[in-house]
Length: 613
Image (cartoon, rainbow, N blue to C red; front, side, top):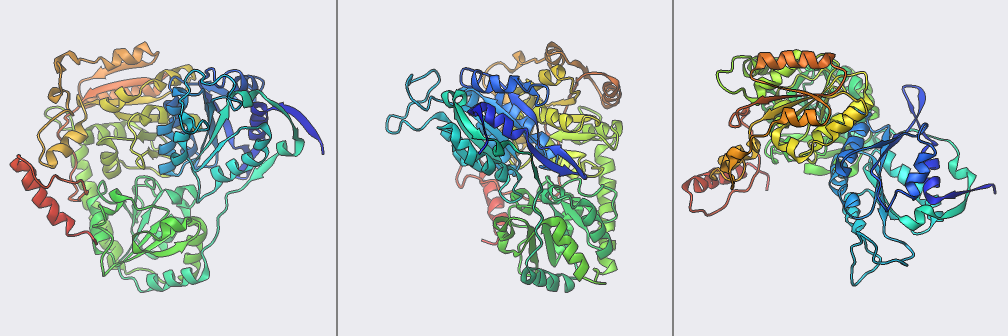
């Protein structure tokens, strides 16, 4: 057997460089590079290994470990899980800073390889700097925090363990069912240890994503239900995009006269103007989609885990007169909500359905009703997003201005607060790849870092990040990284002077305004006069504050011509949001000294009665 002597870190890098994927008929490297923040736990081992291949396998330095992992995750999502990045950190806080990002990737089923420095495997210098000592188990380190938020976790205590672990890492990252973060806890002494690795480990490997068809008996059950449907509705989730099924879905819905609603992850499967498109579904969905969901007798959910925002906390899709079919590649998701499971790849199984439905299609009156309801919603969109603000603009009006100033190829990026809800309801997505909202974990601080990852994945597109002041304050450091890497972002910062979304939720549950808007917090809120434009300029970006929607549109037009990242700030009204009549289960106290809370609890109990249990 032929061997080559490498350190464990060198072997890891050599292996990753030989992993390829067929994309659009061409072989491309799966790993586009690595984000790294070095410390004593990885600078000597991983740093040396990465330095030797920096031209072929680029290393990017970020400013925050969580931020760089968010960027890597966004890169993978923008590449529909076919390309990805590695992130490496030192031990201690450098590693645990990425736990939040790991949880985000886990919740969203997105691939990222996290290589985190660990304490010495030989334990000679224990306790080392940043080591968390467990008095009852010396094998535990801070990195064990990654176990519940990783799809695969391994602590490499000997170099030769890489031979078995690395293929499993790839299987996890590329598995359409088990996709998610893979974490390698990598002791700093092991990184530097050499071993005679078999050269076969570093042979070029071309991967393909499995796209299994559904089992015959499940397909027959689904076909029988669909052929008897009078008012069918499709809910398109992120699995449609990851499977590459958007075009198949478009043709299927058009041929079968079935309206299509979209989850946050699935938004953009169809263009907003598609004849079957009815917008977002659920708590943050359109009135058209939610009314159709209430009336539908069959719901075909494709590639979605049907979380509570999609189902309006189980009040929208579960009823005795409605059959739910879950087409999902994961049996775990396909069985949710008492659904009829249809386990298979979205593209392959939709093709099966289309072939065997023959000439069947839903009644023309149903699709006509869907188009009429959607037209009403589009008219409401025009009113809500119009440039007619008398005071501070609403989020919806700002998004309307951003849309008017953008191009169909642009990508909008967002994550947390009230903005994802307004985007899901109101943003007119122009097709796959134009809408990037992280709402599986709804992580404040993802926005700018995620925008960086999207831009790295799609350098030919303008990436427009919309972010609230609360999320910007949580994490903004990767704006500087975007300047350093020459990855231009257009960041529109909506300043409502606090956490406006949670303030509205607080009021909606009968609670008094408290600790959300700056004016309701302890301390001197008048001292919180943050000059966001000046702050962005200090990080190397262009920036300006605008006072109205006309100036915002002009600023975006100017930013699109600029060579580097631009931040545009606009003050907004924290009290206004778009109501669609849906309900979200947020527990209200059963007893309170406030009459408003007691009244809210009575209303809460009435809404709970609509849930199946």
